Image 1: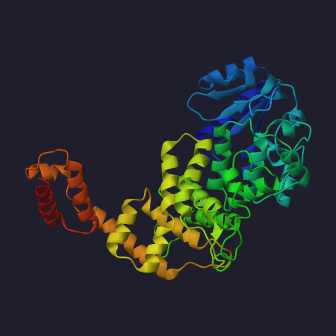
Image 2 (image 1 turned 180 degrees about the vertical axis):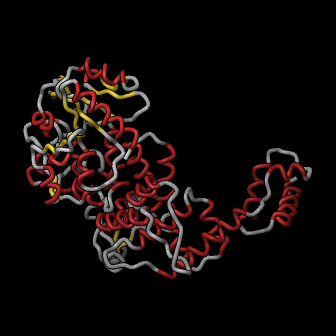
Length: 463
């Protein structure tokens, strides 16, 4: 919990109470308190006083900041606390932000809660007394494991709620009410902004134990087509029943995604002594890579003359498809580069392990990876991407030893440009090629002194 914001919420409530109003914790903060889950994002709602009175109170407590005057949303300087007033909303278009908002301090708790999306998010807690206000049975629904809309008349006005339903189902392991599913099935998501879609996807990937539920839910609602067509295309793509008894590429990808979430969540990667410390360098990129890793199978899968199903070159073909997918959701170049690199390389760790490749080959692989440890974990998730498969301990011991060898080599002194210049070499057209040669010697484990001599000899051969 954010202690500073929590303390300030109490001070606001005391001042509002003295002015004849009431202050409530609202939204996800109440839900998570009841579930005993951490939540540092504290929202309060002030009832029964006018906006000018609230602004005066907030100024007295450190300085009122206006986050959205027309929406009745305020803050206090130095805090992240969101302070809202009750409001009514009327849809003016198809987008997430296409609403006309009217602040109404005397709206009442029932009508204020009615505008919220799901019953579990429509609960309020009186900051002063701790009383839970639950007009729509949100706590009962949570206890029953059900995600249910609040108002069937207004729920469908905000298309973002389709994605929110899917990510809540994934995060809290909830079954969505059939009527809620039906409303979501008939909503148009095309007007949503990419950053809003990406925001809900991130929550599903990073906060759910089983992110696959997000996509399974959207599939049930027939809502993959607009924002996740590359994922939808995995449905029905056949795989070898010998190697993939789990079924089509969709099933495999969902298994891989959940295994990747488990690994990103801190699951141990066993080394020779039964412990491990491999972690992805970027959880979001890692999980998106798990989602995208087999996109290429949609265009490369075919049956050979012997009837066997294969998808030769799918890792390369998948890069273009993954690129299109990521670009639809975000402009973040580094994230796109991470996912494309991981997609391209995802098969190689297990291939090298199966072949017992030499250290030079694994060093070259890790050197070309944006996240060597994440790549090993992705390969592990891919190998375990079926219901009955256990980790390949032989592969894991091999890769564990090789990543440690790579770490050891990369920590040792190595030949740099300054060393070549100090040895009398002048920068010129061939300098980058000479440095590349030095880097190859580094990856081969050649000690710096010997590598410098060999690099200078290579440079002389170029002149």
